[in-house]
Every structure is written in structure tokens, then in C-alpha cells.
Length: 150
Image (cartoon, rainbow, N blue to C red; front, side, top):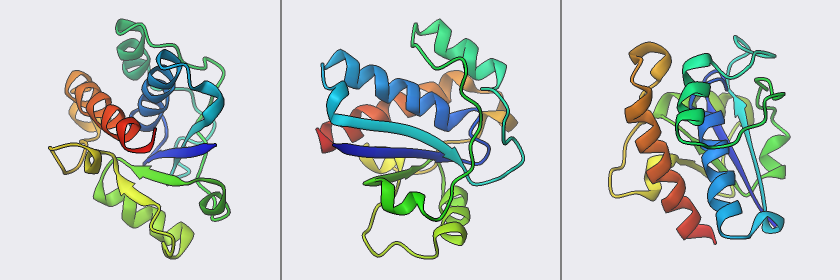
């Protein structure tokens, strides 16, 4: 089984979108039994909160199913051992993640856009409001990640 954890600041926008998109890609390819896909936050600010409404609307606009009962969950140091890939949305997330896990001896930590030709950070739509752009970046990153690990 390949285990992937998507990580952003609050686990209410980017990482749950990535989780839902990746699950759809895997489902569409008939490989649900071969993957574990989840998401986490590096901050406790949103812990226990639902997916942010504009992020939910973006998922619904693209007909991507998501767990309506999920709430924001915070990354724990022991998560490092549970997942094969720890996929952050931006450099700041990586910095925060490293404070939680200490180091990355197994080289599991990546940014999602590392799996595309457009390397860099995925902006936080909480601040920009640009959910459409973020959707496109996350979808491209998830497809690239899937093609790398399948």
C-alpha cells in the first residue's frame, strides 16, 4: 500500500482539496485498495473545523466527492512513520512540518508542485480567494504525483 499525506497550514482548504482530488484519481483508475490518502494541518488554528466553504464549493463544482464528516486534523510527529509521502503545499508548510517531525531522514517530504513542470508553492486561497487557480495547481500536482507513484 502507498500512503500519502497532504499537508497545509489549517487543513481546511488546500490539503483537503488535494486529498479529495487524489482519491478521485485513484478511484477512477480502480486502485482504491492500493492507496491510503489523508490530510493534516501544521497549525492547531482550525483543528476540528470543517472544510472551508469556498473550498467545498470548488470540490462540488468539479463533482469531486469528499468526506462531509471530516474535520481539520493536526500533524503529529508519529505520522512521519505512517506515510510514504508527506506532500506540502508550500515552503512555509515544509518549515512548519520540520518543526513537528524534526528531520526527514527517509526523504518523504515534498511540495505538491515538485511533481509538475511548474515547481513552486501553491498559494493559500484563504488569503487570496483564488480557489480556481489553486484547484488547477492541486489537480496538476495530484496527477503528477499519481503518475510518479502508481
